[in-house]
Image 1 (tube, rainbow over the protein chains, first blue to last red):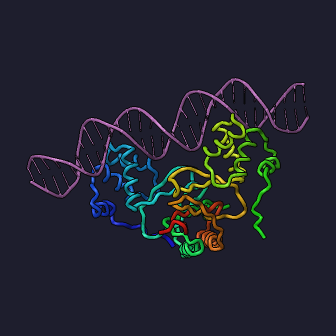
Image 2: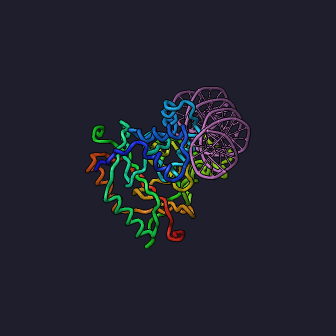
Image 3: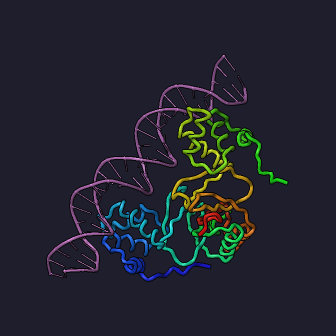
Length: 148
Length: 148
DNA sequence: TTCGTAGTTGCGACTCAGTTGCAACAAGGA
DNA sequence: TCCTTGTTGCAACTGAGTCGCAACTACGAA
């Protein structure tokens, strides 16, 4: 089942305001990049796009803002290690956990929500007496267009 | 009856020899470290331990050997991002995929094999027409001793 | 509207993991 | 023993991310 992607633009700004967090020019630029992203971006891609909005944005401000959003639980950090071996990618956190599937040939990332995944997490919590805070499943392989 | 978890020391050496790959002093040192490790090690820990065997081993040789073992499919690379935010860890690849659960408080890594996980992978392959090469599930949370 | 201040910024210098080019070296087959 | 090819240590480099600091600014209070 595909994810519903539509969100009100400016939602992240609102969420930060609700928490009494200061809004600044660089922050607005970075948030708008994250909100309007059509794919997963890493820190340097976010920096480059944010500079189209506000040319003075600094690398360290991007990292600090990503930190802030992580601490506030508004974005998730992914590895997508299968894709190009390295790098952290960021995405808006929507309600449900989902699985990331990276095609090793064309690089496409597919997201997937699964009841079985939810069941697996419940099983882990029960069988291992483990309280899950975060669960990330990353899959590498070949998508339907690239499989051979 | 105890589980047959023990491995003959030198097994990695044998596997490389079977593939006609040259054996050298530094390589032997690094392989023995990986084979006798009681927990997941990162590259710098492997370097430190390998130097106890052969003091001249270089950082770059460790990375090159880890690359070799990855390419040969003899080790897996993990992120364990939940544990300390960074770093790649390595482990012998045994037959079965397993889940890594990292306790955010005590740092313990628990491994878990699950039929539900296997079912989830089958479901992904079927529903998304995706050919899975590798699937990594990393869970962060609190273990039974640390939960609150 | 102005003011004060705590939070934020850009900057530059730094750390740390990992990579690379290269000349010297050595494994292992002939 | 020799030869070839793969491997090594080294040193220099890259790229991601961090940090201390002085200058700046958002925004609530006056």
